[in-house]
Length: 82
Image (cartoon, rainbow, N blue to C red; front, side):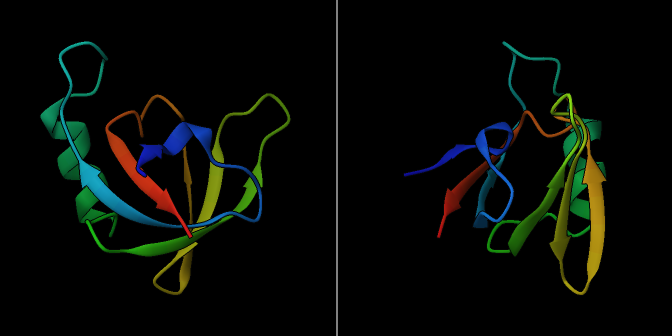
């Protein structure tokens, strides 16, 4: 069952299900496009490496590199925890 990216914890392995623009959040199509250009496309597997002390940003490992995302940037990402 897909959950929002922001619900992930350190050590979680997940796969991206959907990248969507939502009118009820601040997620814009340009933000989603940027995330997809960084490699966060549907079907991509990743691992949560680290979460900052206040919960923001979240560092993930995907496609051989580490990427840090603010929760606000990733509001449109829906994932399935493996």
